[in-house]
Length: 343
Image: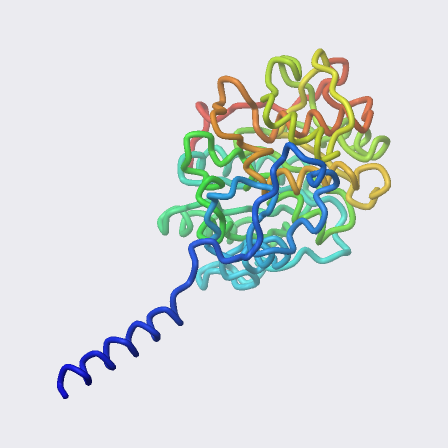
C-alpha cells in the first residue's frame, strides 16, 4: 500500500512540475532564415515573444513584444525620480510643447565627461530641454548628479531616466566587448523622437558644446536630420552580414561603399518631419533591436562601427545632402573624456 501511495505521490508531483515548467524560448514561433524572402519588410516586427528575425538562441528576459512596445519595460521606475532628486527634475514622458530636446547619458566610466557635456549644453543652448540617461551610475555618482541638478534645475528644464538593461537580451548590454552595438544609445534617442514631435539631438557625453548649434540646427531643419562627417567610408566600416540583412529586409535599397561616414555620437533629428526621416527612424529602431543587424556575431570595433555604420547607410540611402559630408563643419569638440574633471 505504501508503495502505491508513493507512486501516486511521485506521479502527481511530476504532473505539477511539468505544468509549471516554462520553455527557455517563450514562443511557438521559429526564427526566420534571412536567406529567404520572408525577411523583406520585417513584417509583424515586435509582435512576438521573440524577435523572429534574429538569432534563434537569443534569450529575452522580457517577452520581445512587451519590450518593443512598452516603454516602461525599457526604463527602470519610469516616471519616478530618485527621492533625493530636486522636484523640478522630470523622470517621465517629454511634454509635447518642448522645442529643442538634447539627449546625453553615461555609465560610471564617462560620468565626469558627461557632466562637462551637460554644463556645456546648458551654457550655450539654455533654452533646450536636456534628457540625462543613466546607463549604470553608482549611488555615489547619483548623489553627485543630484547636487548638480539642484544647482541647475531652477533655471533649466531637466529630465532623467534609467535604461533598464535587465529587460534586454544580454547582447545589448553596455558591458559586452562590442558595447551592445550601442543599441541602447539608438533606442534612447529614438524613444525621445516618439515622445516629442519636434527637434531632438543626441550628443555623446565625451563632447563639449562651444556654440549655440546654429549650423547643426539649420541643416537639420532643411533636411530633417543632420549628423556630422566622421573619418572613413562605408566600405571601411560595414560588416557584410549586417549589410546583407539591411538589403534583404528592404531597410536600405542600395549602398555606395565609397560614401563618407557619419558620426553616431552627434545626431540631430526633426521628429516632426516624418515624411523625410520616418523611414530612417523605422529602420534604425528595428536594426537596434536585432543583433543580426546591429551587432552580428564575429564583429568588433576594428571591423564594424555598429550604430554609426547603420546610421550612415540609412542617411545616404535617403539622400540627406549635408550629413556625412566633410564640407559641413561644426565647432563642437569631440572625445574630450581625457580632459574631463568633476567638481
